[in-house]
Length: 219
Image (cartoon, rainbow, N blue to C red; front, side, top):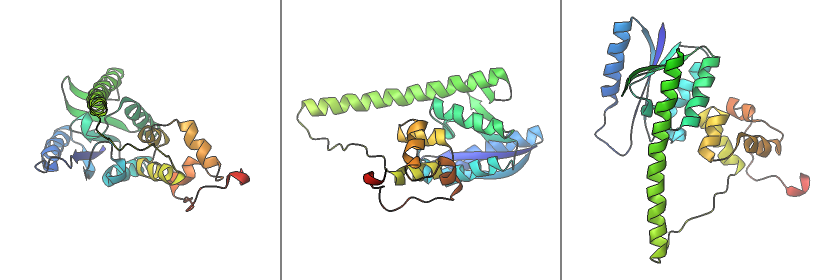
């Protein structure tokens, strides 16, 4: 059985070496008698899908059914949010691909079983909770800074069609792109419809955004 290995190290900690993850996964495949199709390695933050080029290539190869299993050392090396995790696993299962994580607190996660899918969602939920707690601390710090009269220089978010297209091409998934943009899937469809195109056309690369937004008088 062909398997894809995925490893990611953070850009924050320069001492991290992806070989640490790959070594453990290679041994796991050897013991299981699996054939390694390819090793995909990124050096980027977990949610920085735009710069996770290896992750993007893995998603493309998954849609081409180049392997049967995606193997990671730990879930947080690949996906950090519950919604993203579920969308991603559902996409893989549609192409006959399962997901395995070999170093979680409760043992191996294997999405080919009902128990494995449940454990996968639980671990993803805890990862999202951890991320949320960090966000709450950041917001608390910003509130304190505002109370102390310090300027934060925050800007309003403007989701342009160019950014929507960038996220779709980076994530290769409407659900993942919506998660990164913090908007609904319907919003993505709605904005692209103004240009007479669809998210699928953008993902395939058959449509590129213009340099400017559509004229409201033409809508």
